[in-house]
Length: 254
Image (cartoon, rainbow, N blue to C red; front, top):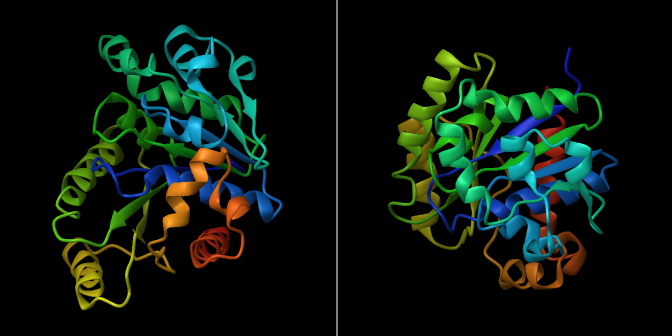
């Protein structure tokens, strides 16, 4: 029985606080004494940058692990937030093309995760904003999917496509995959509109809503510049507390 829970944080729409969610949840789990690995699967390398590592300074990255067979241990970086990171660089943009012709491409991330089984309590996968090879490989490796969702009009239109992809992955490459739910981000509870969008989502797609919603805050935008998550840079803000509460809720699951 695997002791490591692998969560794909996925939404092919950009700007929904996906990377913020991975960094903040990772830090929150670490505060709870959990061993955490974050994996940056986005060629823009925002997660890598936001945890204080300059992608331009890296010679090897997750790209080399996935396409060249470089051992994970050679690429792992430790961060000041108490989590380990498999960093990304712009080279990862080539990985999609490199993997397209490869047999078993859906399993490249799963094989990395299996290599690390038992080393970590949580592995969080920051998926790219697309439904390409890397996202499918992340879903194939995951035990659960968390979908961050900006509570604004139309931001949920892509959810149906993501769920279609999840359905295919369940059918062909990962029967155990579970959708853990939608995590409302950039949430303004004062507007009826935000609350309505949330209700619509859970009804339309029959998805659980992960509580509590993450409030809008300028502090989220400020944190990456310091190379730390909001749990360090703005410890007592509502946003930091919300991510801590979400981490506790997820910890109690399964």
